[in-house]
Length: 600
Image 1 (cartoon, helix red, strand yellow):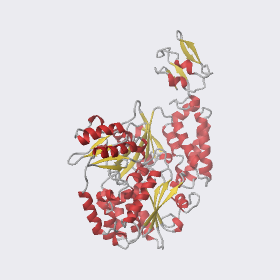
Image 2 (tube, rainbow, N blue to C red):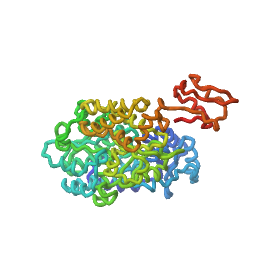
Image 3 (tube, rainbow, N blue to C red):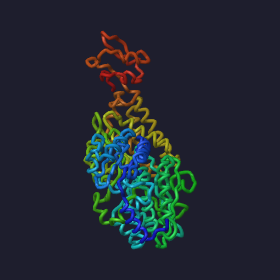
């Protein structure tokens, strides 16, 4: 392919748009592959060849409906597209024979939901549409149009001004204004500057960035090119954790294709602007999501955070001005410069513009990726899009990963933006949302996240190294029913001390799950301490199993599985559990088919 200039890219886009035939799209991001999408893709390819079908079989990324994977979209010439859910190789046979060949849609397998209508998809709009391994597919859908506008028509200050108008804030954590970060770097006089894409997504339950990198890598590249132009950088790095092999592979293919087309490298689009990109792999250290630790990792050093200031935008990678944005922030950039900053600023709420992508997981029915305007309430996300929980009641939601807080259902009318979540003791974070029901114990939840933080602590500062460890010990003590009220007070005191004194943002926010659960669910902590009871029945050491006589069918299944002979009785008199002998293994609870064994 000859290097593109403005005229050639416009001609290519027009040509590609005219050549779009009927197609079958198979979602082959990580969630789809885990559900069997590769077998589905292979079956479509085989049947196309066998039946000599004039239809294109394409890969695409995650469309967000992860709970319904593998997803397949069928679009025949002149007819509306149809999306099938939970597709198997056997269902592929029916789709090809009845839908593609005979024109009869398989209604029983069609994905039907109104949850998509309740979203507002911007950065996810092409995920599930564009082939992530085809630069032509991206260009045909308007890709690199924003780069054309910026490099050819605007100067650096105009780019910064447009970004300021948009109101875009960083989507990776604290919500710092993106234009201001770029402007700091632009204002520093230096012979070298860098752009870094932070793809080190380490929060449990979060996979927004991974899905974007897998599903639409060229959008991130386009955002980095524009960032490079705005601040005067000629080199950039993707920092992606090594646990994301598919994302790494697709980003590298996208970089190679962009170089071949002259959209990366020297003299991009004949404008005289040079910009190069390469990938650096992270080893899975949670602390390397913090920008100064990430910079140290790229430099080949241990991933330790550094005190700020100076901030990376002034003195960053190899002591040069460096702009670090996360994947989702950069994915917004092409949209802003294609449609305009003023257009973007009309979406969202007063101080939080645009949309936000969340990974909605946990006990929710419709798990997957959700994109909504800032200001959408927690309730609209959990109930309206997520469908609530199956077979129980929603208890709370945890936002912001290990650095976030737990928010009870009483506050689900809260609009989701940076300030409102902070007032509730949580944060936006990168966008993880974990829904919890009444079977979740808040002490156990706090212990889980604190254990994660202790294991991932870099060890550089005492609050992060020692404070979190001590908090974990108190949580373990409480969950075993061996703590007293003085222990609870010490736990709370240490949590506030760590918040005030830890070196980096990760350390300062590590106590958030503890502080928030103490604020909203203190009664559960007290029940563990004073009543030796876990209200949710989750903490094994406090679990007590009791046979409910009026529900017991006297089948004898429980007595057969008890390993310590704690259950006595017979089929005539019934059964009972000796609490002194019971080791709380839960086997009787698991085998009972009549809900006759109560746990609590």
